[in-house]
Image 1 (cartoon, rainbow, N blue to C red):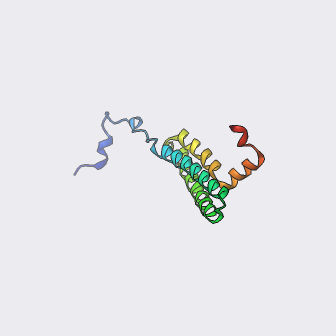
Image 2: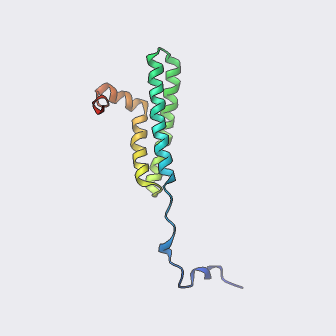
Image 3: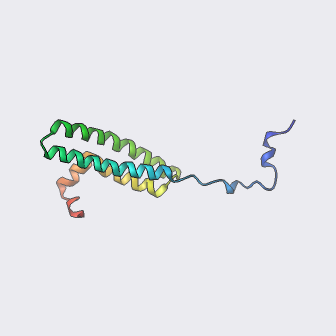
Length: 114
């Protein structure tokens, strides 16, 4: 009977040659966070058109989505699966949070970026 761990016993095996994790998770988290910023813009457009109920529902969806995307981006940054894309995704997801965005708009911080 052959020992299944004999695969690692030969000199050709190098654990340092393990494949690097892909960066897809970080890129997807960043793109979802940017999409949430677009949805936030739709919520503001609905609010300016006096469609308060639709704007509130859209803002709620953005709120929940920004928290979920922020967690996914943190996981991507922490595990190295698109580390810098994940960090950018966390920052954009925080900005896409309606509470943070309204606070920054009220302070004039976001208006100064343009």
